[in-house]
Image (cartoon, rainbow, N blue to C red; front, side, top):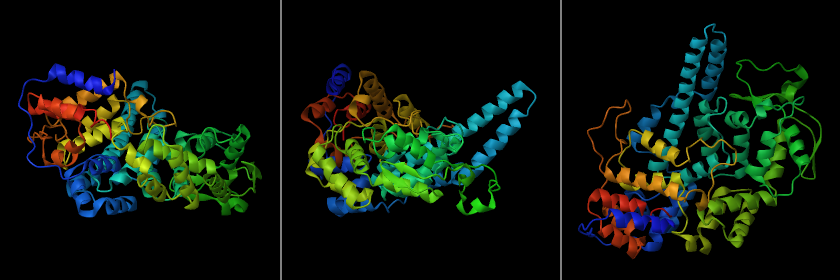
Length: 507
């Protein structure tokens, strides 16, 4: 059964003979403008629509591509400022965790060990939850909506899994330091930032990669998933050569520098937990992708990354993935080619590549036809339903993402979540999605409860049939969906029907 049929079946079963919802004001955005804005952002809210009206499409796109308008509402920023991850460095969190595990291992009583390990696991899960909460607050409330989409896109592209090792203590640092500053910058800088991230090095095992014990995991994924793609023509020999180049790149939780011979000290690099230890590095010359690379210290790794990101295959791979996310599950090859040429000519300038895509005829033709993944569906639903109202309890939102299988930092394999409709549009997925629509439609879903678990006196009941709806949503609803909404027996039912509609499930 198609998504559209599932929706209309639910409407026919649930709808009463209630009065139609009447518009009090005409739509002020054209259908094309409404769909365009919905695609560029995580979904419409009043502030976004107002800014679009003020600037117009071209200047709004310029502002979004610049990504410098990220001031959050004061109550939202206060929530973020109160998180532990806003104050404790990644280095401190991990050093404390390593010390605690040593202490626990030395305990003589097995029950005490079990209890202590549970406490540490709970602490790590709390850090991962805080990282998720911060990213969701920014996605929902930041004026830099495109940048927030790109942060999520790159977190998925350079995926790490919170439940491996001590990555859960590093998830917040990974998003804030390795991804966010480079989300609209040059791709090469993004690759280097993830390469030096303790979260990535722990997750893909390069912390274990040394000249006497080669580990190929990160080298393989750096080529296959991060830069070149699986069909780029490189060989297993290239993977092995890159793994040797990456020897010595790892994590050091000691306060003091590692023991390095005087002759090697010039090559030592330490930045927080990240360490390039020359004593663990293979200084031999290499041949990577047919190019000779003279052995060296960390500069050899930088030269290897330069070689990877300048390959035509990298430009094609990254451009196609961006177009898959923003345009179509099977993006037009000519559009991908134009984006790839811009990628190469601009040294991998992500904003320039995105501009080519957003200003293309192919992008305009695709509007309203890209199925929302769970993250996009949940965030757009909350943005529309509560329209800037400050959420104080993010647990329901996290639960909705978990139940749909797209938890932040929750994908165990390095390939990240799928970007295509067939991964998210099964009957089971749609049933869970419609349940979320019902929960939101019926009330505040606990989103405005206090952080300590006490219930809020503010119901936060969503009035979706608002000016925002008539301005930005109604213009692209089909006659069938409008007729279905007219059959709703209550405001709660009307809310649920809108959030479950085929149009709202696409962008």
